[in-house]
Image (cartoon, rainbow, N blue to C red; front, top):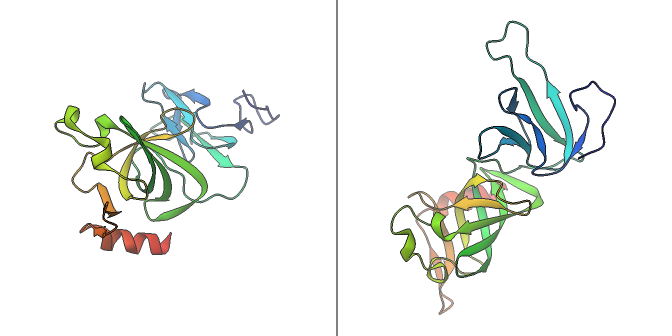
Length: 192
């Protein structure tokens, strides 16, 4: 685990890394830089930083503490499960596509975050018929939804909604292909 600071007995002040256990979700609420793991029972860190616990007011309805991870340096936006992100596809394989996350919602990221779009997360129907090589090409700009942290190296992303998917691409013949969503994405990228 991380280095413990003498700031109380609940791990406040501890240096943590992405994926590291922060606490039990029955006792803690995930704040900034933290997320509830897919099992629903644990809260984990989504970035490297200092673990900070805020205790609730005595008269608060929810008596769980809020745990967050404060970056050890100033950082931009951090992908969280449920966030819509803008990514650039870097590599396409038979069952996955890798991507660099450029924006979270309308905010730029300052650190490098990697995402993976799995074959089963490309679309909601006919999942077994998805051809990753026909769906994405390196350099494509894609709007995706963050599903979870995935493994320690990359976030799992999905394009399985109508408002998600490739928004800008280049055809094999080197012609620029533009989606109807490009105007919105262009505005977002200008402010990223």
